[in-house]
Image (tube, rainbow, N blue to C red; front, top):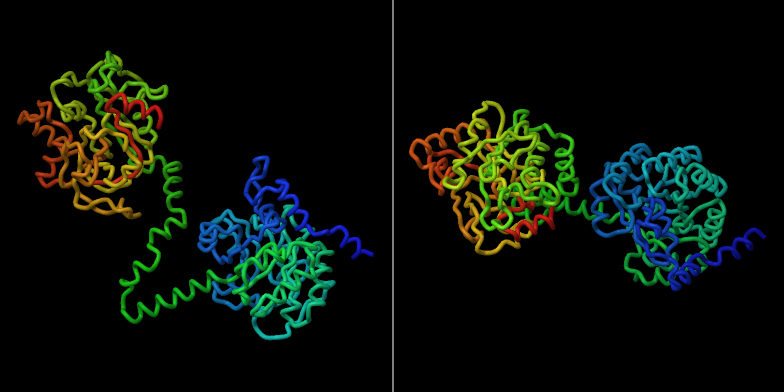
Length: 586
């Protein structure tokens, strides 16, 4: 009677879902519900099982492989007992304890946002072990567990013949214990039927599956070791969609996927392919290095070190350091902003104000610069003012006056603030007063080692900088000992300035100096000494005496000026068009 009632109620979830999908009532698989709520991993796994579409899980065995599965576009992860064990170098016979498996799962859940279905073997013991396992899986945001009806310790399904199976009543108790112990209602319990593997026949497989659904299983995984899909397709036909069906086509790999779709199968699991692929790759690599004595010829065939850094999220750590280690730079960091000019090309807006005081989304450009510098740890910010100096006054900065702003060049402005460079302790940032950049750029520059370091926007990275700038705009074009390369280690490479001149085309050099430099205690001393020498020889008292001239003179005297390539965005406010871009981009 109970079976008849169940059969009348089941009327195939799949058929109902197919009808609903035709009517537009079932949303496609997604991580967000119709109401805009983010679905839990368990809910997403359950959604896969209940969808009318065939879904795929890919095996992963550690954090790195979990991340690769996610980037590969799969909907979920199969945490395979075989590959988790093999990755630890032990047999798939419960030699790895459940707590060791749990630790691996924690890394996988942290590395990927995908739902994870654990291959939980036989539950690592009796019902009591299952209860504790499920509680811990829910705590770690694992989406579900698959339990198989064999004896503990388990034997891999593809090893040996005539495997003993668990008592049906005992296994049903494990399923009930798992359902009673979950803290997330959506957590999925899959019952794996091994009757076909053990040679007990189709009748036994169907009978067991029926009992396991009665006990509360959310889905049935039917397993087969044959090299064709005949058994699982027959099971699916006779099963008549009583509940979602999962398969593991490791042996019958050549079966067309449409066969599974027509059979109404919910999920197919690629159960061990990533580890198998990596084993073969590692074996070939070892053999090659042993034969040739060097991995040099393999470099293009294997993943670069940068890819490991990317997969493990080094960029996020760098951003976190910038957020949480605000004072990691010198406690005596100072900054000088050169903001004396009126601004050619902006005369219509600078009747009394210098361009550094023009409004950009409610704040003067100069105040934005001071804010970025103080956020990066500058204890003192000096501002050199000239044109409209009476309007350049606000808290948070020390002011120096350049009354010869209309006769002399930028180097004279820096000379006016030379007292900021004479402090013996700490580094100093020097920057133009008409540029905009975010603190990430300055943080990276401050991390770069060198006595004088120029932030340079590299040729080839213009899509991140000022692609809109007109061709006739003059720029400080840089030539260096090495062109920009997309290399994770470029901050630690020694790249020196070989030339810097005002030109109109970036193609004439390796990049453009953006107007920001950082100097160490020694670098500050070099600059002060050179400014004094330029003053004594009257070179400084000239409108052509700009900062590029200062850097060229230092290079001529054997002082190393370093280049730091940054692809991060920045803005140089030269005219009304640039100001408009600043309002759009800031």
